[in-house]
Image 1: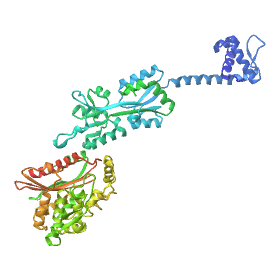
Image 2: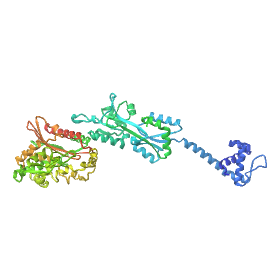
Image 3: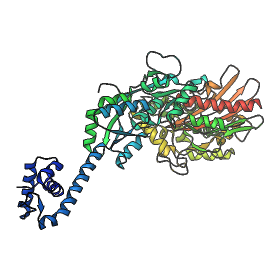
Image 4: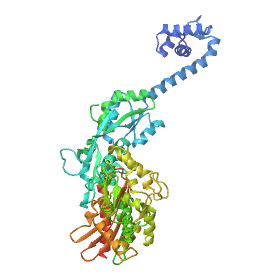
Length: 293
Length: 296
């Protein structure tokens, strides 16, 4: 029979401290017969008596006295381990998120996750850095960029500008300067969209419809890109949710349906699966993703 | 004039360029990197025409001599005239000159190069005191680049290659883009050639007049022409295009006697075959430089 070494030692230590089997069992919060059975099992395991049962009080035998210190150490260590396990379970899961998520969106995701007993801690970073943070294990998981067709989450992109909302799509080709000599209207990409599936496709369209190279470029920050859209007729490539946030009118692109694609990358495959399965709708809301996949 | 703004505008438009505008009456000039050398593409047809006409003048060639020309049978976009012909033709030297200059016909140019080889053309330009223009290869090479080997839908790949594969010292794995292997010249060299054709020079007056006339007949007018032509001006020019290179050199003559030689040589870093905005931008910059000179 396998001895429950820790349970038996706990009973052994309790009874030795209390002086009787009844009181010792009460301290260990187990019924008295269980305490007796465990101590008996321990004695059988060692092949030697721990208590002298000839008196009413439970007195340690010399062997019992010799074994008591190591039994106490084992019990303390087991308690510490239980405590550590409880704390480890409460430690938040660090998740790298796009910089495009607002405080409100992140807080709502956090609250929704808590309700599911998942504790999240966010680290916002640009796309390339998010993948790197997972590799260096600075975060447990990250929302990383994939082509939209492969994405677990898809965020539609279009062009936002000041002025009245307009129906229909905006064609990049209409931004051509021609011989008009007017200042070229530009399209600004935020750093989140400085990734091959989005940037390179848009640059290819820019070149093929005859825009000047500078007419579609990557801004240093979302703030700088938004400022250009506020202060001129320039356009910001963004999601409808971002446009609403910034108070800009949003139109889809005419030449191409462009979307951000996201996937969960985690050091542990299990983490990725858990986040995808439990938090899919909440992350979708946070990203401003389409609700259907 | 601060040319920095124009330079920045060229850069925004994806162009690197060599520009020079010279007032042919005063000699005043203004430019942007006018000594930067470029493969000259079809601009080389100007010295070719001048050299051929000079030899006709000397009696070495007969302008009326009829030559049998094999058809080029080109199907890719770009080539014109005899280069697209499907059947053999017999064309006089004078008419080959017209085709080579007015529609940049490569087969016509190569038929002339067969009579006066590139090295001979280079030697003659030197004799006229114009240095810096070198003819090195037949014109057919200009429509035998990586671009012709790609499907039209993938032609931007050939341009991406052309843009990114340059080596130190303006070398290039594509020979047509390598200034040390292709026919080449700078904006200054071509303005010098134009000056020799429009002003009294070592070039025979008759020959110069014929070249001027041929340049006035240029039908390719999508580049600088729109910004220079009017009822009050005459625009005579020659364009040159290969892969990502777009050039035009010409002279604008105003009714009031004003006369400006203009050379615009550019390389684009936009991987696309058709770039209307590059043409517009070249013209705008050339025009801005010319306007500055004209305003004094």
